Length: 217
Image 1 (cartoon, rainbow, N blue to C red):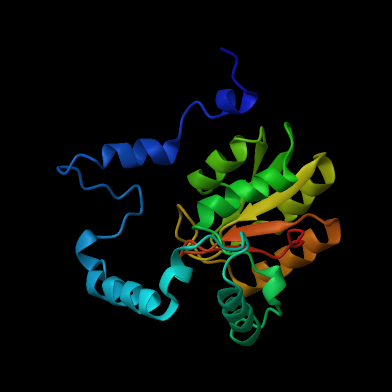
Image 2 (image 1 turned 135 degrees about the vertical axis):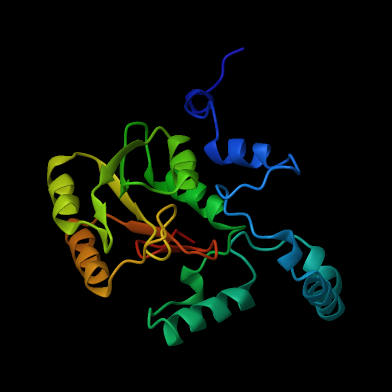
């Protein structure tokens, strides 16, 4: 039986291995970022589910647009515009089932076999796993307490061919926990904008943000 190259590139999953180990109730792991189960808001989730079914009925269980509920996209765009001062329109918002799905979609859209992804050193294992599926090559950029070192980033953008994206995690960076400084964020945005490389980042809540081009409708 012949398999695709993607199967060869995905011979293992670092996060999958961590979660597999956690199936043992005797293990208390600090590696996977799993929340304490006793903190799950079970009653609130039950209430929210009941409210949705009462208000929306069968519509809530029906297939819908792959881009997500239009009203939710409006709410997200409004929040991005008003709270975070990042002008956004509903048609530029794509709702995904967590950041991992969005990472996979970014790889599908931008990466070919051999394409380069620049990332912090160290970086989030889940992003490496998602992008590796598409045959990406990873090049680490020097990182200090304020974030990605801009001089090293620009040097690699100049010297390396076929850089398709720069992946960063500037808020509570995984795995170091650092927060990028404001000056470093501004310098980063200026450099990647000048080189025309889309930056992608995940947030601590698992949402996924692109300040690069929107996906085609």
